[in-house]
Structures are given as C-alpha cells and as structure tokens.
View 1 (cartoon, rainbow, N blue to C red):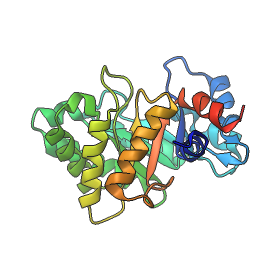
View 2 (cartoon, helix red, strand yellow):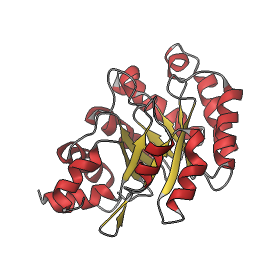
View 3 (tube, rainbow, N blue to C red):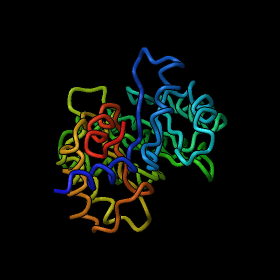
Amino acid sequence: MDKRAVALRTLGLLDLTNLNDDCVERDVIDLCARTVHDGVNVAAVCVWSPFVALSRDELDDNGVRVATVANFPHGSTDLKRAVAETRKSVADGAHEVDVVLPYVAWLAGDRETAKNLVAACKAACGANTHLKVILETGELKSRENIMEAARDAIAAGADFIKTSTGKVAVSATIEAAKAMLAVIRETDRPVGFKAAGGIRTLEDAAAYLLAADKIMGTDWVSPETFRFGASGLLDDLLVYTGGA
C-alpha cells in the first residue's frame, strides 16, 4: 500500500468533525483552520447546527462544504422538530444535513414513521442541500436490517447513507459498510456512502476504500459519493502526507 497516496485520497474525502458536547466557537474556528493542507481540501466540516453560520464565515468559500446534524443523536420520531432543525440549518447556509433515522421505531416495526421523517427532512433541504441519513448500523445489527433500512432511507430521498452517529457502543464496521454499498449498487440513482464512528487511522480508512473499490468499482469513490466522518483521523493522515 502506498500510504502517502492513500492518505491524500482520504484527506479529500474527510468530513472533519466536531460533535463533542462541550464544543464552543473557538473549537469550530480551530476546526475550520485545519481544512486545507498542501493545497488539498477536506470535503467538509461537520458541526452542531448553531455553528453552521460561523463555519460558513470562517471557510469563506474555500471549497469546503459545511455539514451539520439533525434529530441527533437519538433518532427521535419527532418529525416536526427534525424538520425545524433541518430548515434552520439550511437557512444558516448548511450544504449538507446528516439526519438520524428513527432506528428504534424502525426496529420496532414502524418503518413508515422512519421513512416519513426522512422524506420530510429531504423536502426541507430543498434543491441545493444534500441529506445524509444516519442508519446507526451498530444498533440495527444484522446485515438484513442494515440493507432494509438503507433501502428505506434511499426510497425516502437520501442523497447519502451513513453508518453511525459515533455515540453508541458499536459504530462503523466494514461489514455494515459492505451491506450499505451493496444496496447503493442496486439503486437506480446516485447515492453516496459515509463511514463514521471509530475511524481513526490510515489503515482503518484504507479498509473502507478497498471495500468501496471492490463493490462499486475503482472509479466510483469521490467527495460526491464517499465520505469519512471523523475527528481524529486527520492527525494520522498528516503523518503520511507530510502536512501539519
């Protein structure tokens, strides 16, 4: 493995993330300052909704997108609240909203409520904001559940499907990623994939890229189709790129 090449490839796919409970404005400013390295941009920053406008100001149209979260992290069935959060984030300038599928309700058999919430949030995104749907695959557990939830999210309008919030015991796994990618491959419109939760090293990232290359083809992965959501991964990547 050409570690530098893989690190540079991964860097351009990174949603540099701070969703810590104690995050403050200074942390977001510092995060935005770390988005460009030797001319390579990360794909996005992912921050709490109150920091969307600040992030837009800090990034100053440098090509890095601003992502935020809604219905996060518990995946409530409160459709009105999720839609209100989404609308506020879009109004503040979010390019992407990562919404948590109501996975507890979904597991209890209430798939319609889950799909309706995703569809309503997609409508709230409008034409220019992408909706990334967090399945919380560690709670769905089985490959069958993960694939069915992915199909439901896509049917409801998801632009991306995402593994995890990073707030539960089991976050992203290669097995979950392969199941999600298999559903994307069978889908008749473009849908992206985001791996998030517990991805901290170049070796972790390389395993997900290999899975995507095998399932989707070596020319599929790009910032428009594939993301890593991580906070600690950047430091490991910079070891191999020579950045700081």
